[in-house]
Image (cartoon, rainbow, N blue to C red; front, top):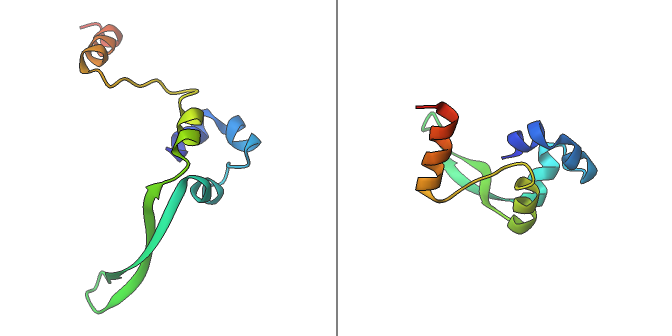
Length: 86
C-alpha cells in the first residue's frame, strides 16, 4: 500500500510528513515482536512484524483519493471487458 501511495501520492505524503516508510508504518501499522525459530533451526530469535493496521479510516480516506475499487464481481467484469475489448 505504501509503495503505491508513494508512486501516486508523493505530494500528499510529503504534506503529512509520511514520505518515509518508518513514519508511515508508525502512523498506520502496529508492530508485534515475537520469538520465532531461527532459519538454521539452532535456536530462537526475536522478530518484529506488522500485526494489523491502525487509523484505517484516515488511511482509506487518503488511499481512495487516487484508487477506485469495487466489490461487485459483475461490475468488475464489465470494467475489465471494456478495457480489454474482448
